[in-house]
Amino acid sequence: MTDFTATPAIRPRRDGVASRLSDLFWRRPQLLLFLMLTPPLLWLGIIYVGSLLALLLQSFFAIDDFSGLVTYEFTLDTYRQLLHPANFDIILRTLTMAIAVTLASAVIAFPIAYYAARYAKGRWKAFFYLGVMMPLWSSYLVKIYAWKLILAKEGIVTWVFAKLHLSFLLDGLLALPVIGGNSLSISYIGTFIVFVYIWLPYMILPTQAALERVPVTLVEASGDLGATPDQTFRTVLLPLALPGLVAGSIFTFSLTLGDYIIPQIIGSSRLFIGQAVYAQQGTAGNVPLAAAFSVVPIVIMGIYLTIAKRMGAFDAL
Amino acid sequence: MRSEPQTGASFPLKLAAGVGIAFLHLPILLILVYAFTTEEKSFQWPPPGLTLKWFAVAWNRPDVWDALWLSVKVASISTIIALVLGTLAAAAVSQTRFFGREAISLLVILPIALPGIITGIALRSAFSLADIPYSMWTIILGHGTFCVVVVYNNAVARFRRTSGSLIEASMDLGADGFQTFRHIILPNIATALLAGGMLAFALSFDEVIVTTFTGGQQSTLPIWMLQELIRPRQRPVTNVVAVIVVLVTFLPILAAFYLTRDTDEVAGSGK
Image 1 (cartoon, one colour):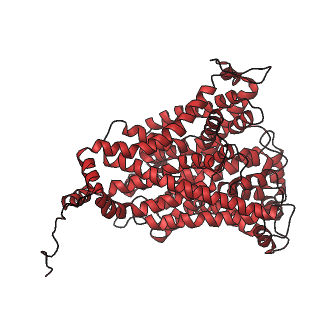
Image 2 (tube, rainbow over the protein chains, first blue to last red):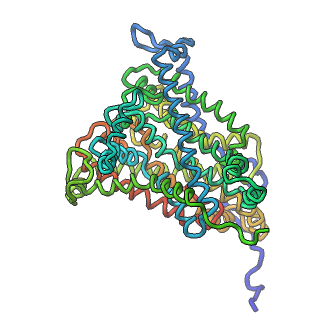
Image 3 (cartoon, rainbow over the protein chains, first blue to last red):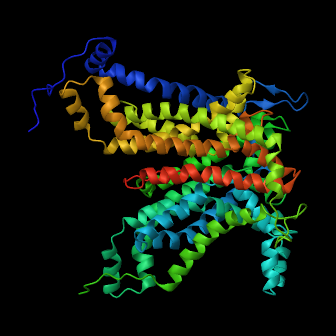
């Protein structure tokens, strides 16, 4: 038997600064809470939110056309400039791309997520999980660079099409107006493929999480009641997976709206919102217009998040 | 009545899932091949020959070493800041109820919910308004901001699973607040913090969008790569650096996965 008398079960009170401080925190938990919250709030509140507000403020100033300097007077002129055809085209182009990328990601992500959620067990489950996580976390630039190698005119895609004697298909695709181009790496098709590739894991993970919560018995019951696999998919699986898909689409949509590196490296020379922000604040030196441009994704995401919240997407995050 | 649940997946589903996973991985594998190519000027496929020469060339490039060193410093310091701030915020949000608690979780998540370019340009205009010169510390200010969230997410999940009665028991047995933290709370959240820290390191090590705005003339490794992508100087060296970056980011991610694999909240499912 262990001797319980050797050490007291309840430790004696220690004396010292640490002990007294600890007592103080115990008596006044608000003080401890205050001390715990101050550092993160100072950092995020001052550095981050402060900068954001400063940025928003600048969008209400305008640049003087003659001197090129910012006039610090409240005006909506800068926002009016967003409606100029050239600028409005940039917004429309980015929105179209974001929608296309989101839809394509959802279509590609669903089978992977469904297989991983329902059929993969044990080692295969870990394999699928890592199989999605590794590309998600591996270097963003390296992934873009890899696609530059793949889509280049002398690269592997051209080679594969040539080996299969299908070069005419690739040429036909590139000959299409607007989305085509001289090679895949300088066309909208290229930009689209790379966007889908880079954001795909963000779509898979929440979809998989939503599908894992669908009981297998529901799918079986649907089949037992005479639904074809297609009907089961449309009336049972898809509605239940929808919050997950919407949660994923928040990422694919938001990330596409704000990205400026992918279209710069793989794509035609026509600008996206991110590139416009970058160009306006850098070479053009028009910070108010850059600020106004960056308000566009914030507003679009605000609307998007409101709709997503109504569809219950936040429970699937 | 069916006695055995249906187990096998249909062939089209298997095919679609397999092709999807391959689509995610082939480009990264391809980079590995290109690191050994003898072709210097173009991205020719298949590679005309294989060589190890470019690893030696990259090894002797001081600019690559400088960029790598700066990246490691920035990522380490940002990770430490994120660990401190993220744990504090997570502890406050999960252990207590107070007014404005929801607002704090939103505030922590905001830096990665909004596109990186907005964080970047906001910080840049704030630096120029406040006349702060660009330095390693301006990069760290940016990185710290979005690294907090990964630590916070991991820590919050773990705090939620750690029973409050453990802490009360420790207090009842006479331990003071610091002893309880040292002997009860810390061992319970240690692996979550380690995993969060590794993810924060990987996130910072790879960050390029915010850094282009807060870095000035300095090059972290991703900035170095971006410059090579826009204006290529020596393509084979870029290939080699790409492989090194892949390896450096893979290891912490794998480690974070194995540290948290048996818990409900596996690290890394949100970036």
